[in-house]
Length: 496
Image 1 (tube, rainbow, N blue to C red):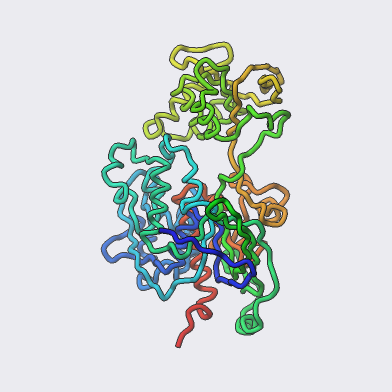
Image 2 (image 1 turned 60 degrees about the vertical axis):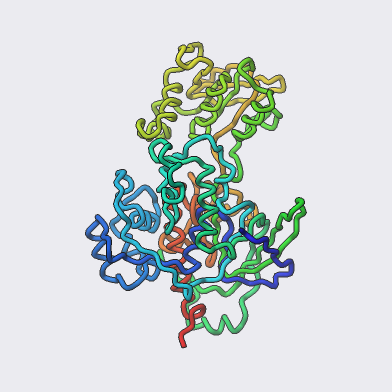
């Protein structure tokens, strides 16, 4: 059981590392910071002979203590971050090809290497997985979402056999992450029901700490290296939600802060007239609530679903299950190679292939009996929403159409909540002129440390740096832990 911790209000607590976000990114980082270390197993080998040779050269060292840039060299994968590709390659050898090679890593708990840290989250460990719709299977395979040291198939056991193509339910993933925290003894590091509202630098660290590190150069902009030693602290403010809903403020300080907030906090908006009207919603849960409460049924006016991603597809499948008519508007064409459905194998994702078929075979004015109640509107955008439940749609050639709807679901993606940073962290992105977006404008970090280029001692991982699949967020945990251990080894692990 997670014990309820009370954070101080006066800034009297200073910790080496504070992690903002308790989803899989934060959990995996806590696992490594707690002293769990990956080594090359003497009983296994990697199918990549070059990587295997590199691992054998320093087999006596944990991967955390090795040169990650050297190990990552020449590897290819579906992440733009080299350490994410490296760790994924070590944990899931040839995973992209559907092969089930045994990982060459073994894990040891080295308690003396533990780095004191706290992980803050607005809910239970697992983050947004606790809020995802429970009836849809995950896009990724179960083993792609597991964390080091605990196989998901071993934890789920017999229940997993009935699931299609080794995909799992979000509720199972959420429970797995919560169990992982307990199983690995990480509870003491987690503070649930805590929301960060402000993060800013405060004065210099103590004179003793500055003097001790004065021999280290203050700054190094060589890519992939730790930028500079910490000579200031981070002041973190927020509140804890106690039993009964009471909010208690807190103020703590940290030498290093890791942003691991994910991307499911703020739904993206169209920015059109009428989007704030009561019948316009931005989540599937609102749609389901309307059905359960009897406000929507198969005799209702159609539900307008806006978007061409997997969340929009999930909403279409829900509506189809309940026989609720749907108008589906999306900006791209169904043959657009960037459309997610054009990149998913049909055999592995039959339900999404069905939605893609619906999108492809439908057009305004036609309604094949196989998809009764569904109308596809490719290359359409929403012009405006009206008070009388009318929506104005506009095609690519500027032709406008007025449709009557019972509800509108705008499901075009989400952005991270970074309001606790100055200017919402805009200056920290790859493009400092644009808002932070996990897909289009991630935070700019050094590739082998995940430290923000513009803010030394501030790190980011997971979707914030473009790693949108759980299988890749683990690389961020490896890079950050490796950087912190190497930078502060003398200070935190003094030799006698």
